[in-house]
Image (cartoon, rainbow, N blue to C red; front, side):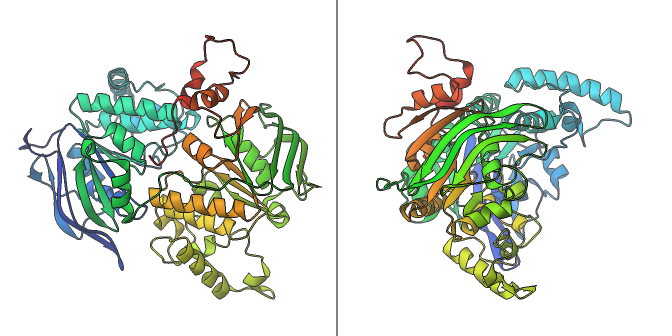
Amino acid sequence: MALAGATDTAPAIELRGICKAFGPVQANRNIDLSVPRGTIHGIIGENGAGKSTLMSILYGFYRPDAGEILVGGQPIAITDSQAAIRAGIGMVFQHFKLVQNFTVLENVILGAEDGRLLRPSLARARGELKRLAAEYELQVDPDALVEELSVGHQQRVEILKALYRQADILILDEPTGVLTPAEADHLFRILRGLKDEGKTIILITHKLREIMEITDNVSVMRRGEMVASVRTAETSPTQLAELMVGRKVLLRVEKPPAIPGAPVLQIRGLRMVDHDKVERLRGIDLEIRAGEILGIAGVAGNGQTQLLEILGGFPEAGSHISGEIRLNGKPLPLSGKGADGRSRRQAGIGHVPEDRQAEGLIMDFTAWENAAFGYHDAPEFNRGWLMDNAAIRADAMGKIERFDVRPPDPDLAAKSFSGGNQQKIVVAREIERNPDLLLIGQPTRGVDIGAIEFIHKRILALRDAGKAVLLVSVELDEITALSDRIAVMFDGRIMGERLPGEATTGELGCLMAGVDPAVTPPGAAIPPAAAPGSDAGGGAG
């Protein structure tokens, strides 16, 4: 839906001198940006650089303190999201804005009903949804409940919502942060199709491989300022990384060989049947020694989450668990007393969960409170019967400084930090307790290049201090770079183990699809599920 007076030659979006402050924090400072029509424009920067704030201004969630916005060459006041939608702007947020117990169709028309009677609106929307799905490869069942859809399909619903509202400009904030490599590749095909139809795409991401693969132009933000805008074909991942961080960044992990010690974690015959009687773990056997990192590779949904939850002390309610787990030679309970998170922490297990917002933080609580959760009963945080809030706050401030959490304000609510800085708070809390075993799920999901480098170094430092690390990640680059051994999970089973230096991406992909290339005849068909393994996972570039 182009604005009246807009011209085809004018930039789709132009920002001039945009400024935005939140109290003493200057999120955006004199931002200038021009996005040509019919292009895919990347915006990159460290967590807290101001990318999401800038796009939230463009979508009407925030009002700028100063500056001007032009759409199609015409100045416009975007006072709220409805004004942005009328200007032809749609946005897909990193954390989706969907009503989970509504159908796809109901979510698409929500807020865009064209009359008092819902039935005619639904009927018209169904036909338009069918057309959009066919035209842009966005097939999804209009009658499915959103809560029953995969993350990748929920993202399609968000894109359909924007297209249904006739968006010509589509903003995507970290769109692949929760997607498998195969889902990310499908998303890129969708974006190319939208571009070919004349749509303009603004892509916010921290993944340099994606920038190089999909964008026409890229702008770099650092500490609230726009520091560069270049044609993608004329730059490189190394140059972009340096522009983002303001220093040279290692795009590959450098680590000395592991020196494994005694077994820390031993798992034998671990099985788990959930409350729906579905077997999620089917006889897991694993061992991790002191001073090594065991990486678990696999497409999301193949039992990795259940394994972390059982080891971390919060298995799914109503599930039945059997088998044996030993930590430093001592058996760990699988249920009842001693199987909860508090007991696991006391036994020497640290846990960075896969979903930081749902399981790692209380979003409305402050950073200093979150930095102590799970360890708030430690002697150093208590004075008799009372908690020593001053001590907790001082400890949190130290973590914030050492882990470069931005902004460095312990009194901010967790929800006020970017996703990457939220992750730093969780990682700092768990690593600094010096656990014998660290469970870490998706450690750098939604995290920028500089923070990825920092978190990887801290994980390796823990390993080199003689601790055991169980790493779960859908990023194959991350698994192969950090792990000393790789175990591949498929359908609740361990398909095999490989050494990072010896395993090819294709071989790991086969194992992730449930096919062991060592026993599969040459030329045999590989199931479609192998697709995720065919991509390196969209790592840091």
